[in-house]
Length: 344
Image (cartoon, rainbow, N blue to C red; front, side):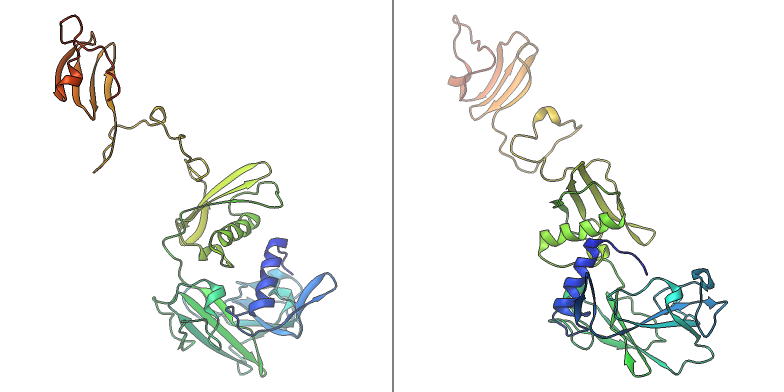
């Protein structure tokens, strides 16, 4: 059986115990604790598919290499149904990723034992809120499509269910489209604190789901629910790790940002003029206050609420506008004002 992390296990158990497999309060198989593990109270049907099966005895294979093109989805990328189907009944709350756990049959020869239905919704809600075609979430509309028809380009979620010998599988709900706009910057501290993982590892992906859930109050099941452009910074025992979710050849991938301000760094007084290096700085409207160009030894232009004063390299006032009384303070009878002038 495929191994999962403790974080992933707890999230799936919570979802199964509170919402069933369809989410949004939908009744589903009941998860119970047996010893130190959790499982469904009654067996559920799991199906998988492959392009070819070899060395099978009564439909059972002994090596995973005997299953070519093994996958959970019934269709390949071109939309064609794969020719071999594997089935298993299990109380496990997780579908096995091991091809040897299934009993295989060539559906081109015998396909009457299984029926298949498919629905889609255009809603971009997260999985825990969309429910399923039997019991949709609030405001969610599921539309039936023929299994032989292509999935509409407007579909956001796709739900599939199988019936084998009068036994129904749980709804298999997959995200078909990914939002193009994420949540911006999310910061989070891992508790209990653990050692920093690597980007795109199972631990990192699970932690980003928890971080985003802490930010929104929602429950997420996959990073593709977060949306491209989501940036996450997580504090671990040995430092911070930051990632930006991007579309890399159609796959949601965390990339390490070249430069990153995680939000905790932007506090009052931390962004100062000495930290800005720009060729041009412009604004439509700004209350600048006192503006000084140059220095007291090399001449300066001073702009404040009293107007504008221009000084030469000797700090002598050579031109002024605005409140001339302020700018032309007499120094020994000469219209000289040492730089900088008094605060207006």
